[in-house]
Length: 310
Image 1: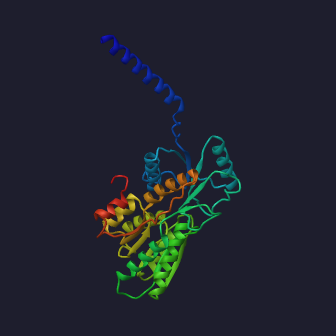
Image 2 (image 1 turned 180 degrees about the vertical axis):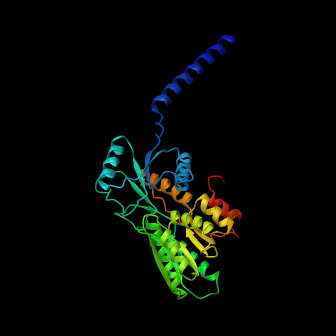
């Protein structure tokens, strides 16, 4: 009886060993991680973080994707050469945040692309972006609703606008047009705001000043805290940084239009993964938010403003 049990155990163990060998040779190979590369306008802002980049990193972690980052080159030909080198090294897809007009990558690179913060579709390349037109429109409506006075608005902008800044501007102008409010435009050359400060000291106060870039918004906020000439002037802007949020909390800025860049970054990685795998993935609508001192610490707003912490 004992001998029969030993024989049974020996035969059963041998069968298990043979089955394990067969499985090890016939099982499907595990999917290797996709290799993606993101070219952004900057990989970090002046505060040491980039919410767009954080969203991409979170998606890469969730989907087990190898994702690396570089800063976009100014020269188109040099950028294309870098992309070709990346493809030769095994990169399977790119996420690109254009600085100005998108380069003609599609003719030179055969792997999939996804653009972020670019409003118009280029060569059928998918685009992931927030609704920046709505962002500008809401800011304009809220700014005008905050005052009962009549007057003009001053729009301060850099010489060259990014795509999302241009869309913010279009939405802003629509809000002004509907309310029949006139506006002046002031173009800042190379970040020099001193002529603007002088202009504001000579000019009667505007209904509000709107900055179309994050860098100019921060510069105007600092100037407002230092200069008595427009300490009572209402300031509005677009973008997200610790400095700008501090200005809102301190009452230096009355409102800021913010797009959910974390969601943009996350959705871009998911969209690129679907392009590489051949599986259709709908590009989601991305939220924007008008932030004021009154709603700055609302729970839902905190999730958008500080998604990585949340």
